[in-house]
Image 1 (cartoon, rainbow, N blue to C red):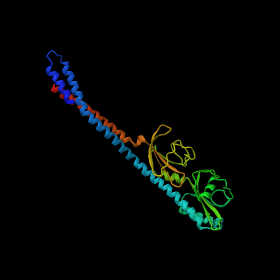
Image 2: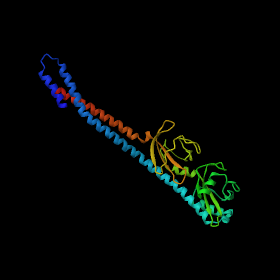
Image 3: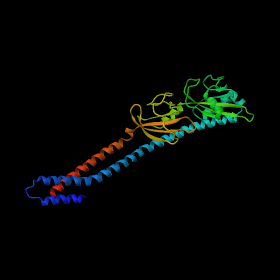
Length: 320
């Protein structure tokens, strides 16, 4: 097709008479320049577009993978923190009798060992089958409290164990409850209940070493903040971000938050709890290197296009 066009134009030139204006030659020159430019630039443009998309995907993966790894490690740390303490409470509930746990001297000795081995325990108490706190060791006046109307009491009675999300309760301070039920062969039952200081979650999250402008926090499945967030609110406030879909493996998704910031949101649900660990990182900071490289590639591409036009124009002028 291109050869036919060239042939037709050259035939017209050679068969025309001498009275024809030189504009014919200029017209042919522009057509040849345009055709050669299209033939040379179109493959270059196609290659540049493919490379652009592929390189952008690779850069995104390079940015997102470290976020997944970091959040996955922190999720595992929180999961292990809770699992160790739940196992400890379960062991004590099984290893000691109701009478031993009802004696606050014995319970106090047990609790001192617990706190020595595991950080984060605030108090411990024995609750009978009717929901009454029989014995208590800790900084609050909770002995004799009736928990029979509490949601966590109903759940541990139904399921045998319970790890709460963060709530205030009688003490009016944020805390997490771990409760384990023990049922004897005779059918007698009781619940051993320990509470955890939520500041342990803050310590774990602070250990992520996030860059300035980034944020990490936990929410529950009602999308209520379980730890303080630098960007999105305090403990027990509603998180303004949409709760992401269920996934126990770390996922990264680009979002625009209510303040209009473009962020990478990394999240993972923590097994056997209501907690969701989330981290937000500004996309601009994460992709700074890509934006700089994209500008350089654009300059190189435009320079190449101008060079092609210049060479084609000069070459065509030489031929004609």
